[in-house]
Image 1 (tube, rainbow, N blue to C red):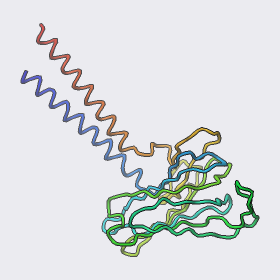
Image 2 (cartoon, rainbow, N blue to C red; image 1 turned 180 degrees about the vertical axis):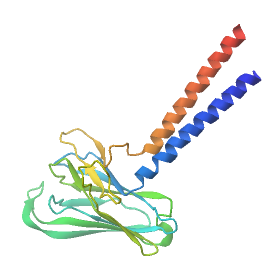
Image 3 (cartoon, rainbow, N blue to C red; image 1 turned 90 degrees about the vertical axis):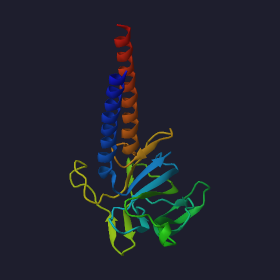
Image 4 (cartoon, one colour; image 1 turned 45 degrees about the vertical axis):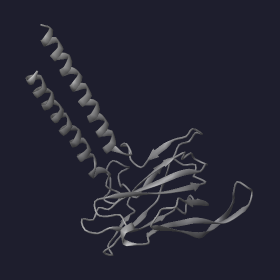
Length: 229
């Protein structure tokens, strides 16, 4: 019984370390400002979530300024209230007026959405991340849409997430613009800017737990066979 317990403990520790490694090494690849979406159908309205990590070792994120494209203009944006932050929506005139769902003439499009912390304790601390939600439309009839984003830190430094791959997406630039994949049918969809899962850390954690359960079951079955013999 003691030997079986020792084998079980060693297996659980080894599996836990492996699972932790998956979570640990999944983090750096995702440490950019990114956007994911729900119901992001071309020609419709969707929920956009911007995930913002504070990559600075010492400063907190105090402001996120999201730029909306002018070549595929969006005419409607609603921001989700976020305690400790204000959201300012900025408009620019359309080159060609559009018509909304109600048949009204629209002469401006959404050019920027600026989120700003109202107090130091509301900012995103170094080493942490936070999310910002908004509903936007009408989404363009194209495979994807990008939102260059300027991130400002408490020490005055900034990071401009506005770069694009120069080789068709084979390599990622240092500061890629958050890009949302859009779907072309009417089904509800959740899309992200990366071919990897939106939350790789949770995926690795789940796989690690599953491996622990399988290891425990195998060792218990082995112990029962040994006792029966």
